[in-house]
Every structure is written in structure tokens, then in C-alpha cells.
Image (cartoon, rainbow over all chains, first blue to last red; front, side, top):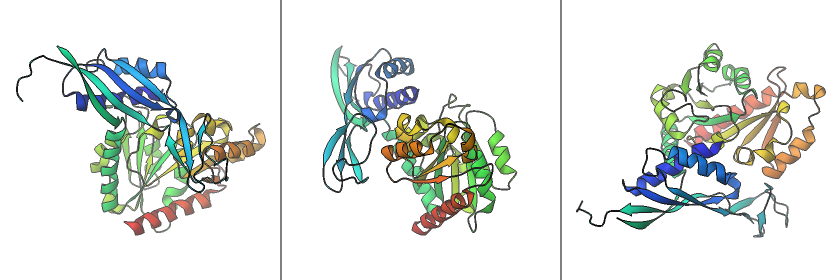
Length: 118
Length: 226
């Protein structure tokens, strides 16, 4: 259900960089800790994009696996389930190295051949 | 017409986080500590606030009440003679299922920041979206009631992972439920090891003194920092 709110945030981010140009592709890196359902995000994005520069744009999602780093013993590992204790030394002082991102990486926009000076 | 690639590399929630930081700066300048108070619908947020807002020693508290519609919760709290500001996510926001930084910003002018030390923002009941959107809070408190089941930390890890205190509410019902409290606490420890937790009952008053003391100390600590 949060895919709808996240789609709104994605469209706003893209709008800022598109500067009015029509967007054809939006490339996204999605961390697994964000619990995004890719199909649901694609569907809600399509919906939220209506009437914006993103209307009709293709959303390409690259899933990033979650990895953690221990702040005490520097152990690094990947997780499949949400478990935030270091398996090597047992501390709870761990940092998320990847998997938390919802990153708009790049977009493709349509540009007129001849751009009038701005 | 040709196509150009534009590199962006920006967190989709950056825009919200920027506004959240602006809110936080305004709260800091006013010397107000802000708690983002979250839970599923019906977990007991308003009841747990009713228990304490009128009796925080030396702390002037205000409440920002977030709901999709209506002012039922705000009316309950206003009867305790604390300043309550209603923020509905329905008009103008399309019935959002959470508060975001911009909505809270729009309510700043209605908040009596000069007259309070602690602002509790009661978020819309929901374990998913509110966890994603910072609103400018100093800390996050969530309520998980025992009637919701012990698996919730595993199902909503972002919410449980990003809060500073978990209130386990409705513990007076434990004798009547199959709920396994130890299992819940072990699930909680898996998702957020060592997070502070309190067993409370808004109905019987169990654990309420500890909850009141926590809020009081947070207001004092953040106030001293400001």
C-alpha cells in the first residue's frame, strides 16, 4: 500500500529534474528493506504519473539486496529476513550498508532537436 | 525529437526529508521537543495520550492530531485542557494514510509553539507509510497492542526499526489471548535489538507511570539541548 505514497515521491523527484521535458524512462534502485512490491509500484507509478511529465514513462526497478556492517567488529553480511544483530560478535550496533535506498538513478527525456536559448 | 539521459541519483524521499529538517529547525528554535507517535489503527494511541498529557510534571504539552477525517480524537484530548490542533489529511491532501513533512509544515502556524515544551504528533493509524515519512520529530514512539499478534515486528520492520520506544499496550488482555509475549519480544529484538520497550495498559493504568516518566525526561533532555 505504501507504493502509492512512494510513487508520489518518485514523480516529484523526477519532475524537478525533467524541467518540463517528457519523460520516457525512470530508473530506480530499490533496497529490499523498503519492502516494495515491484508490480504494485509499477502500477501505482503509472497511476500517479497521469497528467505529469512522467505520464506513460516506463519504470525500471533494480532491486538491491540488504547488507549490514557491524560497527564493533566490522563484519559484513547480507540478510534475507529483517535481523539486525551481528552474527559474528552479537552486538546490536550495526549499520545498513545497502538495502535502505529508494534512489532515482536517472531518467530519459525527450528533447526537441533545436532548443531555443533560455 | 531525440532522447537524452539525465543522471539524477537522488533519494525519492529527499524532498520530504528537507522539509522535515526545516520543521525540526523551527521546533528547535522554539525549544519544543517533538514526538512522532505511531501505531496501527485502534492500538490505543489516543488512550495512552489521555492517560498522561494532563499530568506531565513541569512539561507543557501540545498535541497535533493527524486523522484522515474528523476530530474525534482531538475532541477527546481537548477535554483534558491541553492545546490540540487537528490536521486532516483528507481536504487538500487526498485522504493520505500518513502525515508527511509538508502537511505538518502547513499546520505550524496553528501550533502554539511559544506556549509548549513538548509536541506529540499523533500520526494516522498505519504501520507502513508513516514509517517512511519524517515530519521533523526528535524521536519516534510506536504502540503495538497485544491484540495485533506477535508477528508484527517481522511484518513491518521499517516501523519497528526506526522507533525509539515501543509501548506494548492492552497487556491487561493477556490472560484472555493466545498471544505469546516472549515471542513478540524476541521478534522485536530481531528487528530492533535492545530498543526500549514498556508493557502498558491504557485501561488499567499498568505501566503508565513509566510512560509518563519517559515523555517527561525526553522533553527535559531535548529542551536542554535546544
